[in-house]
Length: 231
Image (cartoon, rainbow, N blue to C red; front, side, top):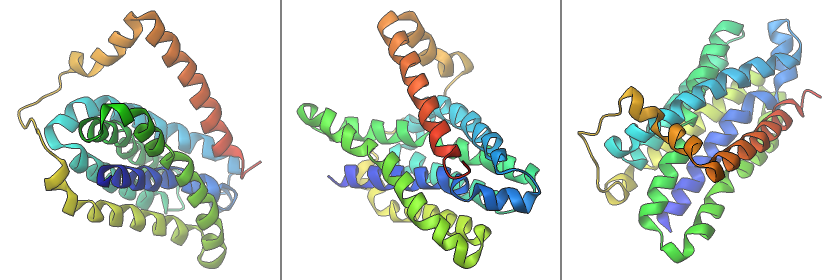
């Protein structure tokens, strides 16, 4: 149960961070002297980082553990949001990339933890509950960031989300020794090893079809959540 609560909190906080800037994109665009649709470039940079972070998670999680990997991810997310507070496009795009690098390992890390600590008969339910952290994070971003931006300005609103990510990373520390078992300190991921999961999925037609369908669903979801406020 502790593992589920922790992974749900981490997932929700990271998702809130990813959607924080799209929630105030018109205000940020005005500060940059650009249309609010610039947020598409921001999210694209974030997901480039997330792809890289997800691929690296295969070697990172066994070596550091699920909790430490999640903590590292949250610190990177917070750092990326810190760069996103600047009213300059180049640092913001770098911040989006850093944010994505931190966001990428969080789902693999939480899945690794729950697979180790959950009963096989309840695994589907546990994973489903954990994944509700993504829409929960979106709800939190929509409910908290715009009102805070109206009171304090968009930069302080983004900074508040960054602080929440850092606090979540700190809050996870007491559970690390209890939940991060079976570490492989000598595990190293090579270039071919990092790409091995992609080759494995592509080699099996059912997995390949499922991955392509998931990609399409995810693309629609990301486009909707990114542009809704601006629209």
